[in-house]
Amino acid sequence: MIKLEPIELNKNCIVANTSDISTSMSHSNPMKRWRNRFNSSNTNNTLTQSSLTNQLISTVNLENEEHANLMIISDDDDDDELSNSQQSDHMDEEIPLIDQHVSSKRPRLSYNKRLVANARERERVHNLTAAFEALRRVLPIYGDQSKLSRLSILRIACSYVYVLGVLNEIDFSEGENAYTLHESFHMLSSTIAHELKRKKFTK
DNA sequence: TAGGCCATCTGGTCCT
DNA sequence: AGGACCAGATGGCCTA
Image 1 (cartoon, rainbow, N blue to C red):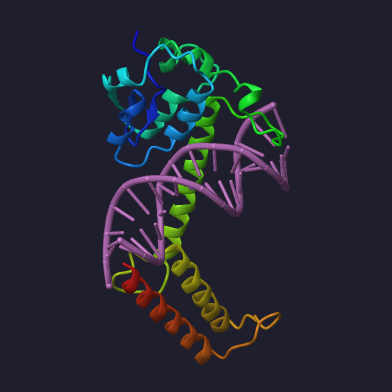
Image 2 (tube, rainbow, N blue to C red; image 1 turned 90 degrees about the vertical axis):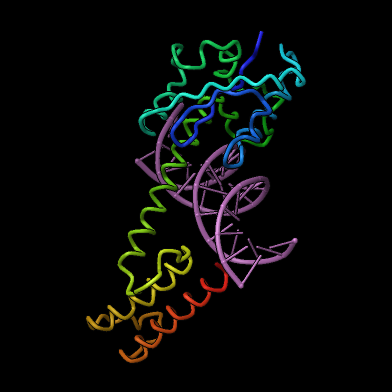
């Protein structure tokens, strides 16, 4: 019997795959690490590695990412997409103690809980990226600024805030050296020039 | 090809 | 207990 690996969440689709399909993924396949670890502690596989070359890919196009998330969540949901495969039942179990870090306070998350946590982390980072994008849009840079790195965005934003503070006569001198308006403008322009030059060099 | 940057996963810690 | 946050690891993409 073909034993499917757990589904993976792509941008817009879910891919049910076997172990060595990972190379076909557009991005790296970090879940492979988890699977490898999981499989290493489960030696009674019903499928040999060689037979995995018979890949079974079932791609389900989803209308949006929220839908995709709904497909993988519900750790306790017996009716989820994984429940039809033989291994889904032990995917909901905590990993045996032998596979856990001894020093860890918490037991290693189950596969489905790990997926949910990954999704949360992904959303958190996406929010962070969106915030950087929002910050970038209000920076006083014209022209090609779309590829500013996060570090550059922060540096320019700091200089810009300083200029705005000086313009509004806000005293930044506590713990900082006080700059004149001319100096703060010069600091901003040199920061922008430096970061754009840096971008030009690295990109 | 090396280096910079970024997305993602992962486990630890903090906080509610 | 579980979510939020963080840092390290990893790998892909892009550019010089």
